[in-house]
Image 1: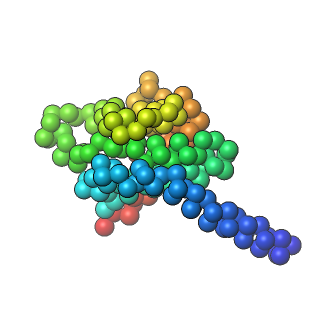
Image 2 (image 1 turned 90 degrees about the vertical axis):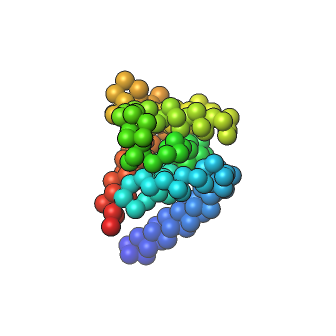
Amino acid sequence: MRNIRKEIVEKLYTLRRGWKEEFYDCIKDVARHPVVLRMKLYPHHGSTNCYQHCMNVAYYNYQWCRFLHLDARSAARAGMLHDLFLYDWHTHAARTGDKFHGLTHPDVSYKNASRLYQLNKVEKDIILNHMWPVTFFRFPRTKEGWITTITDKYCGACETSRRK
Ligand SMILES: [Fe+2]
Ligand SMILES: [Fe+2]
C-alpha cells in the first residue's frame, strides 16, 4: 500500500516537472517581450511586481487547465498578459483621476496585449473578464476564463499576505 502511494506521488511529481518545462515553452516569447518585461517596474501586490504576479497566474492557469484538459496554452499566455496595464495602480487615481482601475484595467490590458499578439477567443475572454465579480455584468464566457478569476484572486491573496 505504502509503495503504491509512493509510486503515485512520484508519478505526479514527474508529471508536474514535465508540465513546468512545457509551460515555459508556451509563454517564453511573451515572458521575454520588452513591453511585457516593463511590468517588472510596477509594484502590484505587497512586494510582488506586476510581472511576477502575471507569471504566477500564468503558471497556475497552465497547471489547472492542463489537469482539466482545457486550453492550457491560451490560459498560460493570457495569464501572462492579463494585467498588462503598465502603470502603478497605487498612484494611478491621484495622477489621472481614474478612480476605477479595478474596472478599467482589463480593457487597457486587452488593448496593450492585442497590439503585441493576435489574441484568440480564450485569451481575449481571460484578459477582458478576469476581474469578475468586481465587473459584475462582465463575466467569463469560457472555462479557462472562470479558472483565471480564481487563480488571479488566489495569487493576489498569497502575494499580499507575503507583504513585508
Ligand atoms: Fe487584473
Ligand atoms: Fe491579476
